Image (tube, rainbow, N blue to C red; front, top):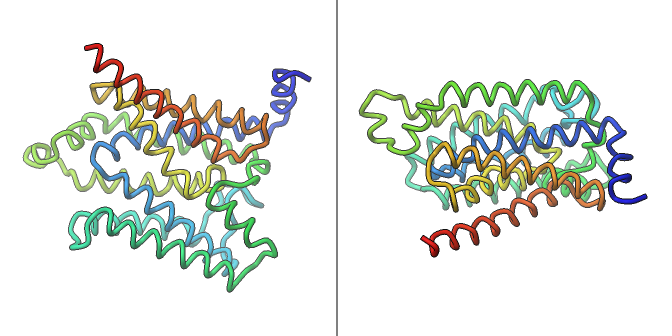
Length: 292
């Protein structure tokens, strides 16, 4: 079979179609939120939460309290430890990042390393699986659990994505004001802290949702890379958002297709496409500046 026939063969399976759609939805949501986080220099929150989510997943698996997403009950199943811990951590990271004596990069380094260390220690000491290395790699970099995606998982993903898009559209003007001139926005009475908190909470939920497909370490790349790529060439807030969305969705789509055809890890393949896009747009931006 040629490449096209092979692709059609794989797409005849429902779980492959579900994985493709869910991956694109994750990329869409990540790009919308990523622009605001990158411009506000809050991208460290996404990275920190991805590490915290790994630690929470390790603890919950060891205690046998919650089931991993896309296993048994599906992605939409309530995660008794992982989701609340990640949401609470989003609040703490935001507050500590703004007010703590330990700022920005130092704070995220401490939390990231601590969460990874605790998670890996728990998975080794209280292992519920004979394949610890496989569990760790699957959680950090994405796993083959995408083959268990069900129609209910797809429906949940569609609902979650719709909520993220609606929130973004409704708050677009406020987010624009809070992103470009926070001091002025506060002076006009805009509750900047509340909007920052909302974005952090949505990012936390996104990370928990996307962990099993992309991996807890790689999901932050989907938040940051498309925004940075778009900022190389786009000038306005709106154009950055639109271009970031296009880049993210295209990288996710072709990354997953490539992963299916070459049997490579989904998360890693998608991030490689995002990295390539960043290199391409960086070169394009440099060329445009020289030409001008």
